[in-house]
Length: 254
Image 1 (cartoon, helix red, strand yellow):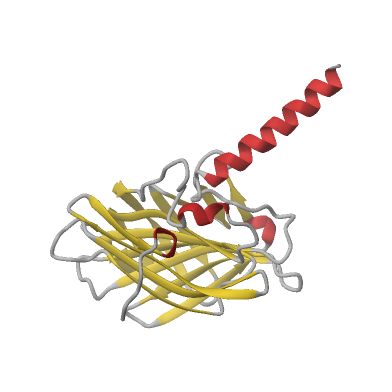
Image 2 (cartoon, rainbow, N blue to C red; image 1 turned 180 degrees about the vertical axis):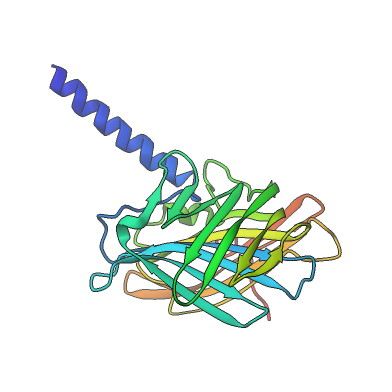
C-alpha cells in the first residue's frame, strides 16, 4: 500500500513539474541526462548611450560529441565576442524559480552576478533589474509561442522573460568599468534540439517612448519531415501589447 502511494506521489510530482515548466518557460526546461539538446538565455543590456550594448548568453549544449555549458559575451563597443566553456556539471538551476548558475556566475530575472576569469577575458560585477514587464500568458497561451507551445516535435522553442526593464549597477570587463545605471534591459531564451535552418530576428526597447519594446522573429521551421515559415512579432507600447503571429492568423504582406 505504501509503495502504491509512493508511486502515485512520484507520478503526480512529475506531472506538476512538467506543467510548471510549460507555464514558466523562463525556468530550465531540460535535464543533464538529455542528449542532443541545448538551452540558452539572452540577457541584453543597453547603457544610457544606446550605441553601447553588452550581452550575456548563459546556457548548456549537450551535443553527443561535445557536451558543455557556456557563457557567451558580446560587446558592441569592441565588436568582440567571447565564448567561455564550462563543464556540464558546472551548470546549475532551481526547479521552482528562474535561477541559473554557470561556473561562479548567477543569472535570474532580478539580477545577474558575473565572476568570469580566464586567459581571454575577465568580467566581474552585478547588474540589478527593476520594473520588469513580462510577456502576457494565459491557459492556452503560456508564452510567446501561443498554442504552438503544445505542438509536439518542435525542434526549437522560444520564450520571453522580460520585454523591457530598468538597469542599475556596473560591471568591469578586463578592468574597464561599464556603468548600467539608467539603461534598459531585455531577456529571452531558446531551447530544443537545433535552431531553425534560417531566420531573421530584430529586437529593440530603446525608443523615445520610455517603456516601449519591439521584437520580430521570422524563421524557416522544420516539422515532421517538412517545414513552414513561421513568425512571432509583438509591440509593447503605452502599457499595451500588440501581437502578430502565425498562430493568430496575422500575415506578413511585404
